[in-house]
Amino acid sequence: VLIDATRRLVFAACQDNAKLLALDLDTMQVRATEPVGDSPDVLALDASTGTVYVAAESGVLAVFHENGGGISAQGMGSVGDNAHTVAVDPQTHHVYMALPSMDGHPVLRELAPAGAS
Image (cartoon, rainbow, N blue to C red; front, side):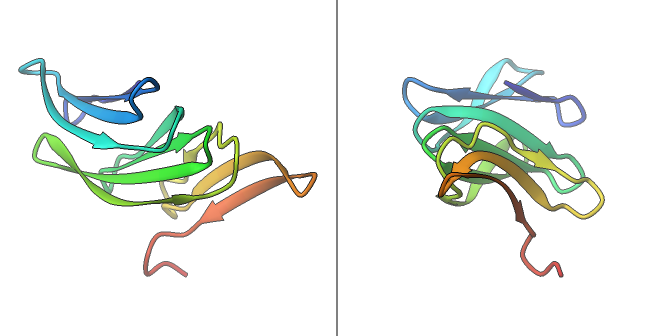
């Protein structure tokens, strides 16, 4: 679960059906339901851009943008098995994921947003 207090939204990643729900805190209504990777595990928010990241144990990272009380899918892709962490640097907007093992070694993945250097 992730709360965006500024936009009054709650995001819940559901393991049973691999969906992300966006719940409006003012109306208590679900505003959007979107697919994510199998076994979604952790969520992160880049508050200044309204970007929500959902990492899944299956190795999939799903990216969404908040829009008027809901979300729209921006992309989904494989980052490596057991993506149990995701963090966003609010200054650079880079996304970080620590993976326990890739070819027998721990890895810190860093993803830059489109257009970033």
